[in-house]
Image (tube, rainbow, N blue to C red; front, top):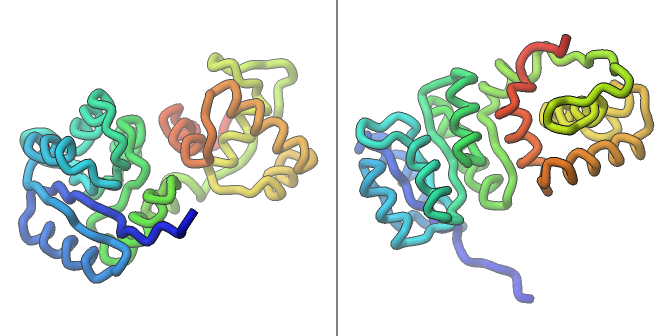
Length: 224
């Protein structure tokens, strides 16, 4: 199969014209990115998404008529396969959680868009998940520790406590080798627990594991 050289087709939905213009200019400087449409509100944006079917949509979280999170939820109901990347002023954990729960695969702060947006677009387009480094450093990384395993205890979602630990550490960005050191088990065992967790949760990617962990609120302070 020949290498796909088509640009990443993007629709931009943001209610601030000057900011939208700046984002468009930033994106259009990249040879592998094409902005195919834009909208100043969520209602019109949904119609455009249904018509254009872009690869990726960049959504402003805060819009007056239909905010970005509501648009993402509607996209899921309409079974649109366009990937979602959120732009926001908010650094609150709850906002990030709502965005990911709605189906977003990326979350970038507006204040750091000039540095991070292009990386986020490419990561999300490849099927990965991108969280703005400021959010990741503030909410995900500083206080990570691992609770002792309580033998034979299972979480309500059907995961064993060990499977839950592994998913949580994967979501924090640790490699299998690093997880094995933290938990005192082999890398092979880490992969086994990860595979079992993925099978139970019916997920197939690290991005989906991250989203699941965020939705479950597993990425806050250390487990008790």
